[in-house]
Amino acid sequence: MKISIVGTGYVGLVSGACLAECGHEVECVDVDAAKVASINAAQSPIHEQGLPELLERNVGSRLRATTDLGNAVRHSTMTMIAVGTPAVAGRISLQFVERAASEIGAALKDKRDYHVVVVKSTVIPGTTDGAVRRAVEAASGKTAGLDFGLGMNPEFLTEGTAVADFMRPDRIVLGGVDPQTQDVLAEVYASFDAAAPRLRTNNSTAEMIKYASNSVLATLISFSNEIARLCTAVGGVDVTDVMRGVHASAYLTTQCEGREPVTAAIASFLEAGCGFGGSCLPKDVTALIAQGSDFGLEMPVLRSVLQVNESQPREILKLAKKHYPDLRGARVTVLGLAFKPDTDDTRESPAFPILRLFAGEGAQLTAYDPIARPVENETMRGVKLAASLPEAVDDADIVVVVTRWADFCKLPAMLRAGNREPLVIDGRRLLPAAAFARYEGIGRQER
Ligand code: NAD
Image (tube, rainbow, N blue to C red; front, side):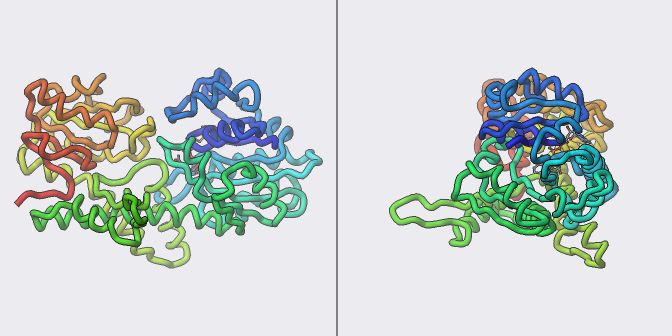
């Protein structure tokens, strides 16, 4: 199928490259001419495992990029909207989605063939049948469900494993204003694993499935962090051991005779740490709370999820202050700026509130990430960016592990070799406590 995708960020570009790999003819559209040029040169503008190889194989044949949205829409059968939906002042901003929808509508005005418009961006329930439908209909003079198809196909990929997630989805949600839209959408995924359930539904349900999915993950993380705080307060109780016991429950682990028990992947969201970040969980929970308020609903569970998350970086500061009640002049190194490992995405990373808290105490700050390069902002002013892990930890008094990068597992050997004994605060419970002279971990307090 000829598919155009508007927005070539983490979702749009990965979707485009994967669909091209599956045999579709894909044209990716972006307003950012530099991204478009980079894609056409088969250079990935983002760090994502497997993506360079997909670009190498498909650019120039089944995959192209352009800034000309109208042309891309006119020469395709389906257009997916994958632009950003940032949270602005506690609400989802639809400005990019609405603009893309209107431009698509304008291109459809004189198009004779049946076309399907699909929203892939995460949008609040009611958006596709509301704002998107209005924008496309107003600009095209056509009617959804009659002259063109209108669908919603949420994306569940995770940065860091985006290509693998897209290629082997756990479910495919086919939202549509009518069965014809759903049929065309189903064709896009026809070659995907038949075992992945195809869920046909209406657009608003498809939108809610995505929000509910992200919200349950965020809830598990904040739940684990709340339990971790109590473990620390009680003393002699380690949250990692507690959660290992929780994982072993039959609800989360499948016992197969003669084989190792298999823990469900969701158990990884029960790992305590310094909080969730990224471009999805914080903004999606925020957006759902705002939608709840519009209907007079308090949404107390989700409010608490955010509240725990926003205060979690303070737990790191508390651990530091046990050893350094006065942090003025202390040399503090933050390891990891990406919000999770294997991505260069720093959006909403817990590293930033942690850096701000230590800056507020007068510490001297260094940061290091193997891949991510933060944009210049207020938080990064005055923070030294180290070029390597040894340089980052060289003369640190305190080392804080924020991102679960595999590279940071070298830390014990590196500190031993350099005869260094900084206080290591493990915000991800990544490293063995016994490997360090001075160690503190979230959710762990020795009696
Ligand atoms: P992103 O910020 O990485 O990319 C968005 C792209 O859209 C940018 O390149 C921008 O230049 C482009 N754009 C904006 N307006 C445009 C327009 N009118 N025409 C053409 N291009 C335009 O965003 P992302 O992380 O890929 O997220 C996109 C959507 O997918 C969001 O709604 C997000 O919540 C959702 N989502 C993201 C992830 C993820 O892991 N990043 C996972 C699932 C769903």
